[in-house]
Amino acid sequence: EPEVTQTPSHQVTQMGQEVILRCVPISNHLYFYWYRQILGQKVEFLVSFYNNEISEKSEIFDDQFSVERPDGSNFTLKIRSTKLEDSAMYFCASSVGIVDEKLFFGSGTQLSVL
Amino acid sequence: QQQVKQSPQSLIVQKGGISIINCAYENTAFDYFPWYQQFPGKGPALLIAIRPDVSEKKEGRFTISFNKSAKQFSLHIMDSQPGDSATYFCAASKEGGSEKLVFGKGTKLTVNP
Image (tube, each protein chain N blue to C red):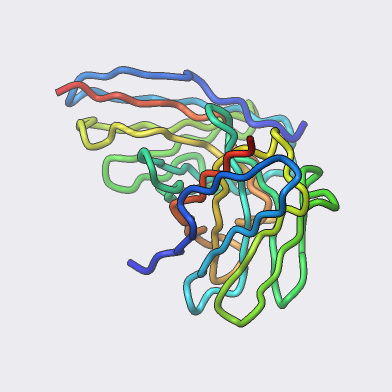
């Protein structure tokens, strides 16, 4: 089965630093997402992206966050100035469409902000 | 109103038994209810999903039961196997979509051999 690939698997950063999390969605998918999971808590929606623009975002996705599809294959999440509370597992996901469509998740990037 | 409440938090079942995980929601605009399975170190993977126009959906050993009036849905795993040991998340979204899923807090299932 095709996979969503995320790099790096672990990222450690200092508070206030910028981080970029990278994802390669499945090649024929058109919708891309970022979710996060704080340790021991539920998976939370951050943002969805379609046709080179954000289609939905949650209250968590504030001005410190941005997404980009720089080259037609990669999909990135940038956190401009990390905070301690940004420490979480960040999952990228993609799907062919929206309605009744299976979401494929990557294995995640564990972000630790010190 | 955006919450999906999931129980139990953890569940231990003997091999061959039935595992039952329950979820409840408040937002009547939700119309797509998937269940995701997550193994340690992996992302969630779609297991089975249901729309509110049916009360039950079965795929192999996995069945979703849906009660629209009670705003509840549940996952039943028949003949549970040690390989089913994982964390299970229910989720919900509006407009039948995979977009902006609202997840429950998860149930850690352990199936003892």
